[in-house]
Every structure is written in C-alpha cells, then in structure tokens.
Length: 223
Image (cartoon, rainbow, N blue to C red; front, side, top):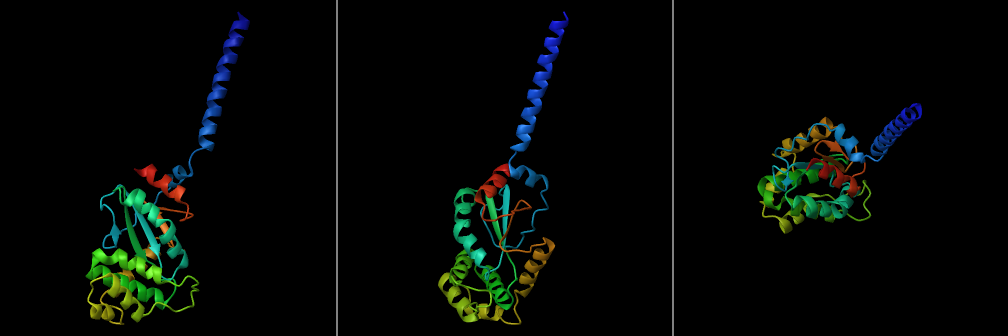
C-alpha cells in the first residue's frame, strides 16, 4: 500500500513540476509587446493633426518628427511605406504627424509651411510632407541650411493648390499658423519626446522606431 501511495505522490509531484516548467517557459518566451502594452500610457491627442487612414481605426500610430532630422527621412522611406500598405490602407491603423522643433529656425519654418498647407489644402498635405523630406540633402548635417522660404514655396507649388502668397505670409513673423506649431511643441513637451523620430502606438513609445517586427506586434496586440 505504501508503495502505491508513494507512486501516486511521485506522479502528482511530477505533474506539478511539469506544470511549473510550462509556466516558466511561457513567461520567458512571452513577446516583448505584452510587457510594453502592460505599461501603456495615454493616447496622444491628435485632434487637428494631419491624419491618414480611418479616423476611428482601432490603433493609432503617431510620429513626432522634424523635417530637419535625417533619421525621420530614413524612417519615412523605409518603415512608413510598409506600415501604410499593411495597416493604414487596410483600415486597421490611423497615422498622425506632429511637428518637432529640435533644430532651430529651419525646423520652425518647415513646420509653419506644413501647417499652412494642412489648413489650406489638407488633401495635399501628405504629398507636400513627403516632398519636404525628399528635398532634405542626403549628406545633411544639422548646421547645413536648406529649409528656406523659396524652397518651401517651390515644393508647395509642385505638390499643392495652396495660395502661395498666403503660404509666404504664414512663413513670416505674423504667421496665422504659429499657434498650431506652438500646440505641437506643447505636445512634444507633454509627452516627453526627446528623440526624433518618436513613434507611439496607442500610447506606447517604441524603443526602436525602425524595428518593424515590434511595430507589428504592438499593432496586432491591440487589434
């Protein structure tokens, strides 16, 4: 009898041990995005921001970008097209852009131009947006001036139907869109954005904005 009881106890202990090992394996192999979504922050307020995709999409992706930032240009050329094809165009994700002003007057000038275009011709915003990044010199250093009223005007003429005189006025000191740029700057500070590009998915900041696998994990987790 003792032997039978001992065998039952051994079997029970073995089953418990196997179960514990299974739990440990699951925890150790848990996708990183589960930890990320566990500490999800507040969604960024994107009302009034340039947004592409279905407005009430289940997932909101926000880029904090600076037109003077080479890494933002690279992100727009390498990651954004995949995001657009896989998730924005399929109605699963809405994508918004918020201006960052980390590189001085040129950042401000480009931001003013983008806001002016968005107010005057919102449907043309994304074409203008891409064209400004395309105009960024490949070998750009932050101290190389290339964002000028003349260059921004040329880009707007080629990609939008905005009133060019109004655009020039909006690029002056008396800009009527300065408040919108200031609002973006407030969002940058409010969300403690320190690097560009900063990508947020439903309030979660990506450690590496170029890690498309992490982007897809976070999106799929929230769909």
